[in-house]
Length: 191
Image 1 (cartoon, rainbow, N blue to C red):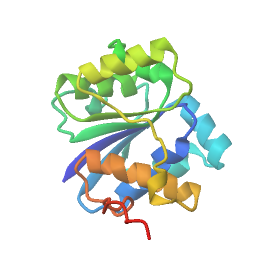
Image 2: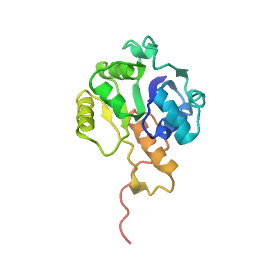
Image 3: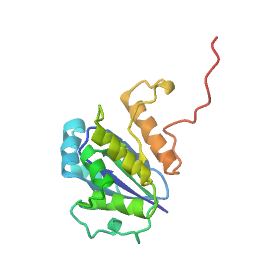
Image 4: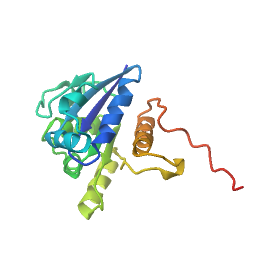
């Protein structure tokens, strides 16, 4: 059984976290632990007309971001990785500077200290110098900065296809089988 921690923060792009959870829910042998920030709950409602409880139903276990004593706050909790989808610039800055001010940033800090996969789907453009430096710091600590940029070479026909491709690539990064993003077969020669 693989254990994955998923956090949804207040950046735009709540759909990424929702699609990730939905895919993990239908993936056999994966246990999910979820945290949703208060700002994420607002975005889930604004962007997707969903309530917190709708998203919590997609996870195996749900933890309050205020519960610093939760199992995911300890390195002794064996997890295979963590994804913050989407990851706000505030959360990125907290992770980059070791500010364990809530359960999301504490769990991310644990991933880094235990040398486990931490994927941050950062959402903000354009980037300012503070954003770039924070992304560099997280990368130097072993985290993976994974902005959800659409891959147009697959010729997506909808927003859902673009989101699914990105979520599939995140799952690839975590070593979890997926059918959302087909393997690239190479360019077709021009006719």
